[in-house]
Every structure is written in structure tokens, then in C-alpha cells.
Image (cartoon, rainbow, N blue to C red; front, side, top):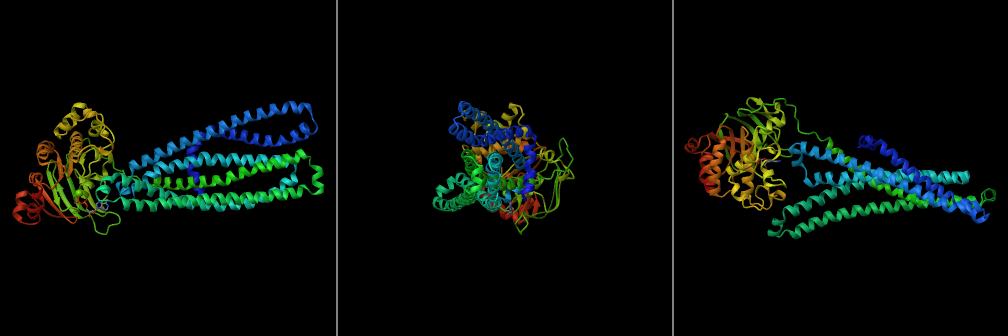
Amino acid sequence: MQDRLIYRRLLPYARPHGKVAAMAFFGMLLEASVAAAFTSLMQPLLDDALGARNSTVIAWLPVVIIALFVVRGVGVYLGDYGMALISRRVIADLRAQVFDRYLALPSRYFAERPSGDALTRLSMQVEQIGQASTEGVKIAVLDTLIILALLGVMFWHSPLLAGSVLLAGPAIALVVRFVSKRYRAISRRIQASLADVTQMGQDAILGEREIKIYGGQQEERERFAKVNEHNRRQHLKVTATNAMSSATVQVLAASALALVVFLATRPGELERLTPGGFTAFMTAMLAILPSLKRLTQAQALIQRGMAAAESVFEVLDEAPETDLGTLRPERVRGAVSFDNVTLRYSGRDEPALDGVSLEVAPGETLALVGRSGSGKSSLVALLARLHEPESGCVRIDGEPVQDYALAALRAQIAFVSQQVVLFNDTVAHNIAYGALRSAPRERTVAAATAAHAMEFIEALPDGLDTAIGERGSALSGGQRQRLALARALLKDAPILILDEATSALDNRSERLVQQALGEAMRGRTTLVIAHRLSTVERADRIVVMDRGRIVEIGTHAELLARGGHYSALAQTELSADA
Ligand SMILES: Nc1ncnc2c1ncn2[C@@H]1O[C@H](COP(=O)(O)OP(=O)(O)O)[C@@H](O)[C@H]1O
Ligand SMILES: [Mg+2]
């Protein structure tokens, strides 16, 4: 992205804060003016107070010094606080936008990239934009003002000498230009490496048990060392570039200084400058050096912020899920049909679903069986538009799913997915989640009871109000699954999808939950993916999938009699569980 484009996109975030920006700018102006006034004070100090012993100047100088620093204090406060005010707002706004976008992006987005990358964009990179816009911009503005003011002092005392100093300007500008390009390139690499660090940290934390059991520590350590080392090197490159560039800039400025000393000692010029005037000139010039140094170093901050802005805007430019449908039925009847549906995940040659056609009547219970990887989960995910098919059409009540408003479509579907996800909240809030939040407490309890979750919930320290911690890590797999079931039961939607929803339950719990599910399935369309014969044989029809295709459809008895895929499955895999 071009710099100009990035600036133009960042500006609107700061624009509403014009008044604060003006205040901050005024503060910096005060600070810079005091810096200039202070160096200019050298002349009366040397010439009038020390040289001519002028009593008025002697009396006033201490007062002026204190007054100047009071003014400077006010300036520093306005400048620092004003800039922070703006940048914290910009950070908060940008962060909210990125978070919002993450909520709206299609599942594909998250499947295609490591989560560490998405997380650092939200945490680190937004922060870096903020830093660039507080510290970076503050230094850029303040030190430019200081340099201008000091140049003013220099011109005031000797236009000829000041003019000769300006000769160093273009050379310094060239150096700064070169290093800022380099900073940008390094900053991008640092960002990528930080995403790697985050990702590895996440893997190590989430996978701590596997690492322990399988003795993966050494391997993880080595992988992490690589990422860590890469990150370290990149950071050192920034420091090296920084030190080198500010050293170069200082040498250039010192050359200008040498030129001044040379010129100032020429006979003609010396007579025109008082010792005080010359001292003021030199003080101003020396005071420029730290400002020049800060200005070149601020480039690193600013370029890092620009690289971060690039990648944050990349997220904001990602298209959210398409939501062009307008149908908003109160409650669908629950007729589901797949018409020659093909689904291919990005980066895969083999389609996950290959021309699948299937009709499910309202209220029907359909079991999906097949080897793992045969496409069962992919098929049911299409109903809720968690993925978009490459071709073919998925319909509910005869209408293509994309003709429904997304939220209205998903309101029709209760879904227990293969991987139960629980939030870092209380048990009650995990069951009555999202749109269900306002459900009355009795209904939450009823759903939990039906899912046979109440028995273990009651044993928790605060019952339904127990916080279950991150991802429900304190619960067993079966307990988590029962909470997910309770959540789905509470939703009471016309379409119920159970993707291996009872796989983690023991036989007794499963039988108990089966009763509740049997009741829940009555009057709603149910797609159930299961391995257990006991679950499958109860279904109205059974669909057998293999390699993305439907290979058999029929009732338990029909399929057994046929002696095909299903009867083979029933004898081996299905019955093995039962
Ligand atoms: N997000 C994804 N990205 C790429 N490939 C996927 C993704 N999800 C599933 N697949 C692939 O699609 C195929 C079908 O997977 P899935 O529908 O989960 O099968 P099942 O639920 O029957 O075990 C598998 O080959 C799987 O590797
Ligand atoms: Mg699956």
C-alpha cells in the first residue's frame, strides 16, 4: 500500500478530534518556542548581565527563566496529553473495528491462516499504530517545530551562518528517506515473526498435555528458538539502522557546525557578532542535534506504525460474509434439500462434497454415517452457510439458503458441532448463549436437565453460576458435550443438527440423553451424524456417505438387507461402539 493511501485512511480516525489536535499543537508550539527563547537568552546573559553588568537584566533573568519553564510545562502537558487522548481513541476505534470484522468474516478466513496472525493484528499491531501516532507524530511535529524555532534564532543572530548550515539539509533528508524504507521492510518482518511467536505460544499452551505425554518439549523448544532468534535479529537490525542513521545525521550536522566555526572566524563576520550573539547561535545549533537525532529515530516508530496500519487495513478490507438475503421467516417448516452440491476447500484438489443431492422432509430424522473424512460435517455446515458450495444449491423450505438473511437463517438451526466450544463465562451463560441470553432461568434449567447436565452442574461450587474457565477446561469431554446439547435444546429451533454430539458420553449417559433427544427430535427436522448403532437405527432414514458422495439411502432394515456399505459399517465400526 502506498504511504499516501495509508495516511489518507488513518486521517479520518483522527479528524473528529480536531480541537484536541489543535490544543496539542499549541502545546508543542509553546514547548518549541521556549526552547528557542531559552537559547536566545544566552545573548543578554553573556552580553548584558555578565559583560555590561546591566542591573535590570540581572534582576529579571532569573524570573524570565522560571517563567519560561512554567510555560514549557503547560506546553508539555497539552502536547503529551492531547496526543495521547487522540491516539488512545484511534486505537480503541480501530480495535473495535478489527474485532467487529473478525465477528463478520467467513469461516474460510480463519481456516486459511494461523490464529496467531489474527490475534497479533488485534493486539500488537493496533497498539503500534497508536504508538506511531502518539510518540512518532509528537516527535515529528515537536522536533520539527523546535528545529524551525532554533533555525529562527540562528537566522536572527546571523543570516549568513544560518544559511550555510542549511546546506546540510538535503543530505540529511536523503539519509532519513533511505532509512525509513528500510524500517518499513524490517517492521513487516518483525510483525510476521511476532505472529509466529504468538502462534507457537498458543500451540504450547493449548497443547501442553500432548507435549508432556509425547515428550515434545525439545522439539517445541527448538521450533520456538528459531522463531525467537529471527525476531531478535530483526529487532537488532532496527537498532543498528537507528544508531547508524542518527550517527550519520549527526556527522552531517557536525560538518555544518564546522563550516560555521570556520566562517564565523573569518575577519568580516567576527566583527559583526558579539560573543553573546555567537554563543546564542552556537547553543541553538547544538540544541538542534538532539532534535535531529530524535527525528531520525522517530522514523522507526512511524514506519512500524505504517507497516502495522497496512496489515490492519488488510483485515478491514476483507469481505465479510455475504448477507444479501431478505427472507426472515418466523419459523421455517424445516424442509431441507441439497441439489447437486459440490464443495471444495481452498487449497484442496479433491472436493469435500461431490454432487450431493438429498431431500429431507420437515420433521424427518436423518442419520448420516460414513468413514471419517467422507464429508458429513461439511454437508451439514452448508445448511448454516458456514461454507459456500462451489456449485449446486442448498434449500430450506424450497428457498435457497442465501436468500435468507443470515441471522434469520441461523436462528432456524440448533447445532451441536463436533468440537464443543464453551466460552469463558458461567455455566448458565454458556447454555443461554447469544440470542438465548434472555431466556428465563427455568428454561435454562429444563434444557440442562433434559441434556442430563444438571446432575453435574449441581455438584459445581456455584451451580449454574459457576464460571467454567477458558474453554471449559475444568469439565470432562462428556460434561462439555452435555452443555452443548443443553444449549441446542434451549434454542428450540425447527432444524436440529447433531454432529457426533454424544460421542464423548458413556453408554448410560447416552441412553439417558437419547430419550431427551428423541423428544426434542419430534416435530423438527434433525440431521444426526453418529457412530453408534443405537442412535442411527432409530432414524427415519440413513444416508451413507463415502468420499464426498452419497452411496446409500434407506432405513436401517432396508440397508442391512441390501448388504452394501451400511451393513459392512454396521457390522464393524458402528457396532464396535455399541
Ligand atoms: N476447513 C477445511 N479446510 C480444508 N479441508 C477441509 C476442511 N474441513 C474439512 N476438510 C476436508 O474435507 C473432507 C471432509 O471432511 P468432513 O466433512 O469433516 O468429514 P467427516 O465429518 O465426514 O469426517 C476431509 O477430507 C477433510 O480433510
Ligand atoms: Mg465430521
